[in-house]
Length: 126
Image 1: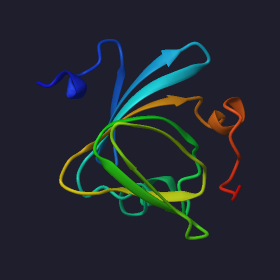
Image 2 (image 1 turned 90 degrees about the horizontal axis):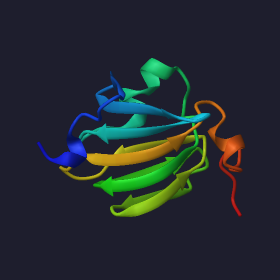
Image 3 (image 1 turned 135 degrees about the horizontal axis):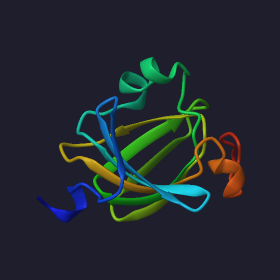
Image 4 (image 1 turned 45 degrees about the vertical axis):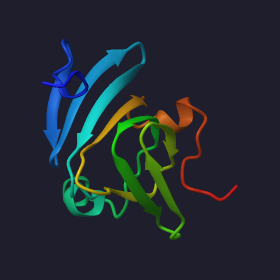
């Protein structure tokens, strides 16, 4: 198996809404590798599980493979193609573009990611 997709030793492995997650504690935070399959869309696959109209989590990480596109509630859009460092503010929908899985490495502090990394609590225009 390709190293980027192989299980991470010592990680807590989960499959949530079709997304494969490997989570490793790192001090007061976590490092996550997420594999989003082709066709994944947050509003289709995660909204029924989470129960909010948009993803309310901040994301800070590195897109190692693939292509993602997204939109905030105010219709402001974003798009990232690997390799790319990214920040996504809370209050968004996002989806995988094309036939290749998106592989993301994220730095995460659970519900406190925005505050701990000095990010806005909600999407805003600069």
